[in-house]
Amino acid sequence: MSKNLKIFLGVSYLLILFAFLYFIFGSIQVNRLDDFSYYKELQTNLDNYISANILINLVYFFIFGIVWVVLLGFGSPILIISGILFGQWLGTAISVLSLSIGALALYLIGNFFFKDLVKLILEKKFIKYISLFKKNEFFYFFIYRFVGGLGVPFFLQNLLPILFGMKKRNYFLSSFFGFIPSFFIMNTIGAGLNTYIKQASNFSMINLILSKEIYLPILMFIILMIVSLKVKKKFFNYGN
Image 1 (spheres, rainbow, N blue to C red):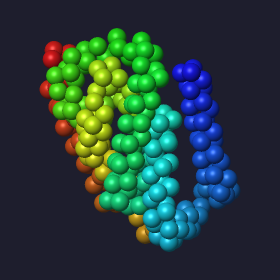
Image 2 (spheres, rainbow, N blue to C red; image 1 turned 120 degrees about the horizontal axis):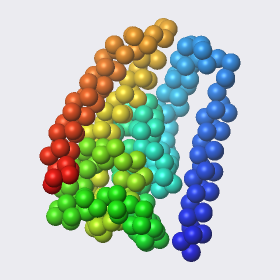
Image 3 (cartoon, rainbow, N blue to C red; image 1 turned 135 degrees about the horizontal axis):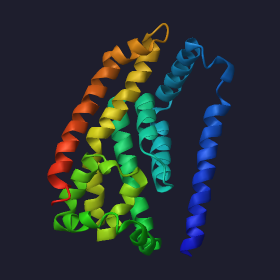
Image 4 (cartoon, one colour; image 1 turned 30 degrees about the vertical axis):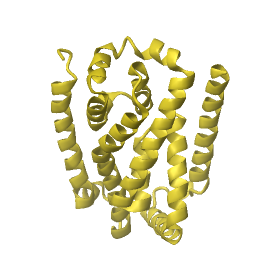
């Protein structure tokens, strides 16, 4: 049963990924990729489409975000896209909610079907954290999410609590609140890219980086990384 489900999830993920890529690249004019005016046209068309169907597009994105995480998708592309589509605030809200629910769904599926496999693969690698999480699973998993999962790939972050049997409520809430800082920064970068394309008459990497819509979230990201390193050293060093 679990083997068949694993195959189903893998095939479904590939099908959704290929469908998404086909939809994206099928509508792109490859011969105009070096033409900045083409990106401005895409941005204008996309803005008009999203604003005309904001609620239904939020629902579509919400569902897609959940499915994407369940099928082991990466987090960063979704965050950039949500910022481009919905702006920093609404994009942050919808991505935090959808990815938190998606992560919980993946955790429940993994805990039910692949618990032994997850423990076999991950337990030795993360043994030093298990006792720490058991002390206060909400607090330490919140910190773990806040610091970006200590460099662990997103889908493995979502499965890690299987090792210590985390409560569903604590899993969702600690993920939800722990995601907010980094998700906000990534959505702000996505929104900044959208704004730059809208306002610029031609592309310049220097102007892009120096635009406040880009360099401010980059500075916030650097600050978050510095804070994360200090938090990691305090709570997740080998001596704790």
